[in-house]
Amino acid sequence: MPEPKVAFHTLGCKVNQYDSAGMEQLFLERGYQVVGFDEVAEVYVINSCAVTGRSEAKSRQAARRAARQNPRAVVALVGCYPQVDAQAAELPGVQVVAGVHDRHRIVDLVEAAGHPDGTSRMPTTGPEFGDLPAPHFAGRSRALLKIQDGCDGSCTYCIVPAARGPARSRSAESVLRDACRLLEAGYQEIVLTGIRLGAYGRDLGDIDLAGIIARLGELGRFRLRLSSLEPEDVTGRLVEALAASPVICPHLHLPLQSGSDRILASMGRRYRAAGFAQLVEGVRGIWPDAAVTTDVIVGFPGEGAREYEETLALVEKLAFSRLHVFKYSPRPGTPARDFPEQVPAAEKAGRSLALIRLGRRLAHEFHRGFVGRHVEVLVEEEPDRGLLQGLTGHYVRARFAGSSRWCHRLVTVRVTGAHPAGVEGEPVGRDG
Image (tube, rainbow, N blue to C red; front, side, top):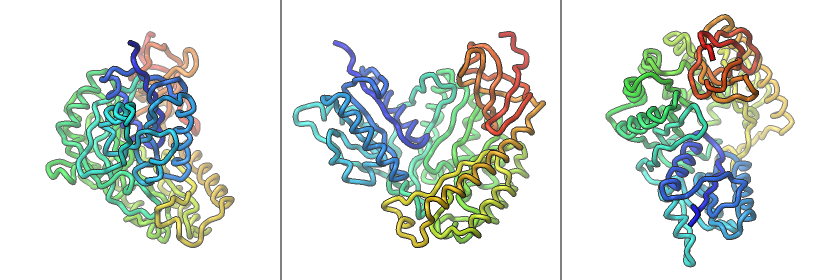
């Protein structure tokens, strides 16, 4: 009897990517074959996103597409969208609906739905951490490792706390066990992920993020990278632990969102512009080699020319190495959706474009600082024959000529050129 086929479609963040890889592993362990989402399969799993109304719409579109591809298939809609919108359970063609806390039961839910009396399960969240098996990231140089889920924040534009539930952490033993498995599988870099990564360990009481980083650093020679950290979670103890770690990548992502105190207060952010600047300067004082990247939201309700100029000025002053710019999108179910002084779409577009241009200039200046230096590049792909591409520890994209045999390996490269998107160079001490 041929193996049943399952296909995945993942929307949203790195945490969702990790969860999808974990669910794939569950299906593989039960004898399923994982295929592309555009292929005919017996099961389709849509790991949804609810951060914007557009991402919800994409989740619905994916479910309808799956039902059209194979009307007899079991279609499962899981994750954040059904967690925040009960109407997701009414979508035609969807047999399984599961929230963020039920993904570890996905195979059982799917197989139950395949029976004549099959049922869907409504989403739930719980206070404990829902473990998925250590996933395999096929064809990837880097592996994600989720160590935390949920958020206790109250940002007025964000639906994530409602979707993901309260902050909760994996045990240190579980984190270390899966990290060892990933290293044994040959991954050269592990990326620690979480919805609010800096809150790791607060619910455990016996460890924090600095502590788990120190323990991971004892596992051997590899690269360890952090995903985004909330500014208020970055303590002097944490920065000192990062600077001292033999494995940590010199890169911090700290979301600014706005350089205006008035807008930050309206957003429900727990810091102000001067405090954020002091934090970044403090990080660079302890860890001068670190690259600092950020997120900015433009066009938040009430953002006028003055508030926007304050953001521009702070971004330029702090000279981020990479800037992610988002146009504010009203999210149903969040307080900010009903705020007065909504910014016109054309104004958002203009502000976004100007910030993107500033970000490209700052990135180019940062990249020029590597010319003539040796950097370690984790090769991810060969976009053209004989041309390799990967990331440095500073999260800079690098291209250089080399052998396809170097894919998924760490290669020392001398940087010879820089541009806004990254750097170019030549391998050092490699004979192919």
